[in-house]
Image (cartoon, rainbow, N blue to C red; front, side, top):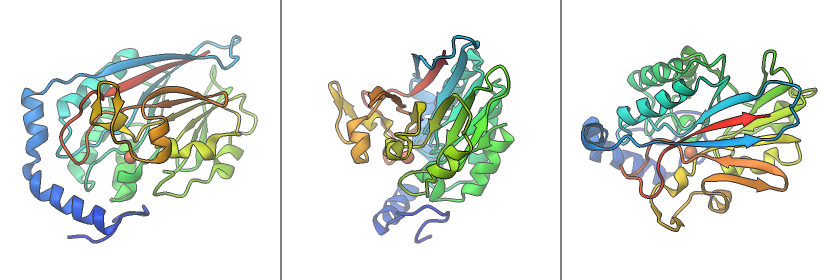
Length: 283
Ligand SMILES: [Fe+2]
């Protein structure tokens, strides 16, 4: 039994410790994921958006975005494979991963699955940020898996794309709720890039991105409420998550996209919050 976070993540409360202990007992043997693998529907929506970033002189840049895999007892492998197959079929220039790769602890088996899924997408550039569930466990194991899959993990760092997209910088911030976002450092590395695309696990990262000249902010974390009503989410984590639970918003001129992610936490159910992957054309 572990009390407290096994990683560097903050806010691993006593209540969280108890909830995870109970989840380990109730979901022992990963029976929900196994049952869903057998009888569930692997339904994934592809969400497409065009972002105008003044790049008429350049070929359009295509970004595939996936978040909240939550590999663990509640997420069927077949669903994850379906989501990554969609991204592989799109063959985007860039694959962006939005964090929360696991639910409960990181293990070698979970890491192997993450590495295999990420490696299967034929993108020239892959980047990843970390989420709260990653920082609460052995995140070094997750980071190594992402790198094995070909992704560069951006913790308050920036990656400038190669030509013909070298006008674009991908700015990855640490998880805003449990980590230590450092936008000054991350955006300083983007100096000189005409187009900055910010990636941060949760909508709570917005205060660290606004006024930094970003053309787009990508995040996840909300699961679109995971359990929602036909007219919208019921319970969403975080006050900015409640304001922007899922989809594309325009906030003071900044296009802000919130993915519903793929996997599940706490209970093996999604209702009116289907998994999604995003395809963004930056023109
Ligand atoms: Fe999260």
